[in-house]
Length: 285
Ligand SMILES: Nc1ncnc2c1ncn2[C@@H]1O[C@H](COP(=O)(O)OP(=O)(O)OP(=O)(O)O)[C@@H](O)[C@H]1O
Ligand SMILES: O=P(O)(O)OC[C@H]1O[C@H](OP(=O)(O)OP(=O)(O)O)[C@H](O)[C@@H]1O
Ligand SMILES: [Mg+2]
Picture (spheres, rainbow, N blue to C red):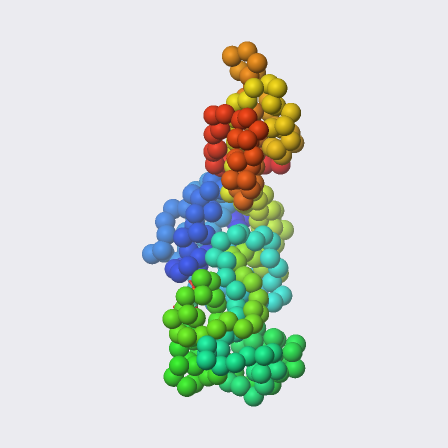
């Protein structure tokens, strides 16, 4: 029987969250980092532990069928590779930064400047789009230090909290792209492997939807139900069940995690009592 060959970062920022989401979709993998390859026990899947930066080429060559990878790396090294699903973790952006003490009025200021980066294709595409001629220095790490040691006038690198820029006295002046971990697919994937990928994607979607949602249970006097139901959207409409106490009901619904406090405050004001909010493991629709 066919198996889906999926690549996961061997070690680094994506590894733990990638393994966690596979685990949450009910796939148990025998072992982790010491091996380069592991098999799932209960799903037709083989996991290959690789460097993030090497994954686009493996996908292009069809050596692996799919991968969990940073979107920024795909844009840099595998622009023709399709994204199947955005996975919502390892969010960051790829930005251009210059010393805090330098002034910046527009992209035109970059003409003739030296830019250090680990993402040359991304930077070149950005420069071409804006008709800028600049000199690239390709560096594998610690890019943020280069302006301080006189090697570059600007850098392009990953920014998340901004603390690395801050520590190196740099200011972010252009955002080239936004990125997060994604599930990507090889252009050479076979039919049987594609069917397995579809079933993996279906499971991932249900977990991702559940991560964004909360299950709410509450009690309310019947005369307040109408107003409370207006506040609770639910997947279709909230479930209403009578309580043993006469004149009272229990309401069950699903809310968006981001609207949580707003909805809870509104529910309390509308007369809801005994509000319980629970995480959801899976949401299938
Ligand atoms: N500070 C950050 N905050 C959030 N996400 C980040 C951050 N830095 C990197 N990422 C994302 O995580 C991915 C992996 O980053 P990490 O630093 O672990 O690997 P790497 O050194 O780029 O790759 P390799 O596995 O090839 O050694 C990046 O491609 C990016 O998408
Ligand atoms: O905005 P921040 O939250 O400070 O994150 C940005 C930093 O994170 C990444 O480096 P990482 O820590 O992965 O080290 P690396 O260069 O060794 O990969 C990236 O290359 C930046 O340097
Ligand atoms: Mg890094």
